[in-house]
Image (cartoon, helix red, strand yellow):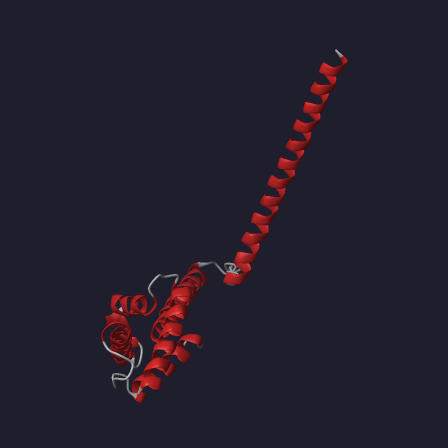
Length: 190
């Protein structure tokens, strides 16, 4: 039992760190549970296994708290099924098949589909009301660059701004030094 408890606690710490990084939070598993609670009704309807994951995640946090604060590692508080479920949950976090990721994909997919339907309906109504002599106009599709490309563009712009600042600083420093040398020469000559 001692080894299982230690392994469970180690796995919990890794999952906690991953969630902290992924969700930019100071509380990993607790933050994940709070996020699940905030959209519990939508998630329990749309994501298969949402309730079970929520309950088992709360149990995992309870086990971790017991092992960290109340009981010693020789007790039989963590079962093999607890460890196996949490290991599966940890792997689902890495593969983005955890409950919150699934809900996010479902909801963004539904929003995208609604937008496509709206634009198709708008295009259809424009086609029906437009005289035949006027060519059909299709609105250009704007494709948003992936997040990593957006960051690259921002970083490139920030880099150019930083280069400009450095250049300006160096230029002003050189002018200051030149002015200082001229003043020194002026006083030495006079």
